Length: 377
Image (cartoon, rainbow, N blue to C red):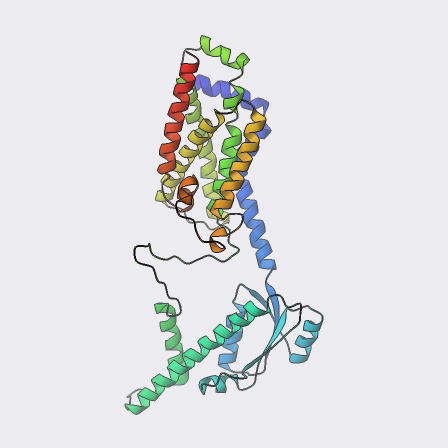
């Protein structure tokens, strides 16, 4: 094994930059991609103008809830300035919280409490309007619950004279603790529902898995290059069999890849706030083993490196499309049954051990090594 490592180091020395590029691609590529996307998303919030005519607690709470949204960037001003900015298209739309907003909400009145202005270029007006309407309905629901509690306390001569603010705070606390505004359901025979990501959603480890597949395929091009007649002739003078030689090389590449995988774990944990568990380490190991065996087996079917590179790129693009990493197809078209079984990345993306494709890749590897041994016998 030491002799094989020394020999491999001599080969890597001749193409050090290329080897380091493919080894670092999953780590640095994922980090740069996620960082750039997060920056773009932070800078691409929809600018809206908000005019608050009612200086009350409920109106300020609504303004704070709108400002906390990841969808919009709020610019508070008076009505004249807000409409002027709308005419110059500096804001997408304008929303005015009218005077006596709190009084109307407490009275159960929901008409004419908010006005909105938009232009023919207000591309995000509809989703922003729906978000604000839902927040107003939330405030109205809390007000209705508060009125009901105060009325019941008065009718039954409650001993404690609660104030509106006390009941409102209690309602908010119950709402947060009990998660009353979110409802999950499942069909019979299906797994528990999970919160669906937004349309633009990038998973760090999904991007890493795709880039890891690409780098693994390209770094295993040595399988094709060592099948050349001038190179393969040396096996007649080696102490180890060709089967043993290839197996040791696969193990060597696995440990080198895993070393850079640990670097990825450290970087993503420190810089991208990814949580790592011991179970995930085993998931990553099973995934990396599968990639090494699959890359070796796939490279063994090609005689020209150029063709192998193009097939590898095409395969990675197809799998990236199937996983939804490029386009969130699962949110656009219905999920096709059994398609995930043909995706070697799916188990890792679902945070499961890569068992099925690990077994397939292992059988693929054994058959390839046996075929090589018989061919060269």
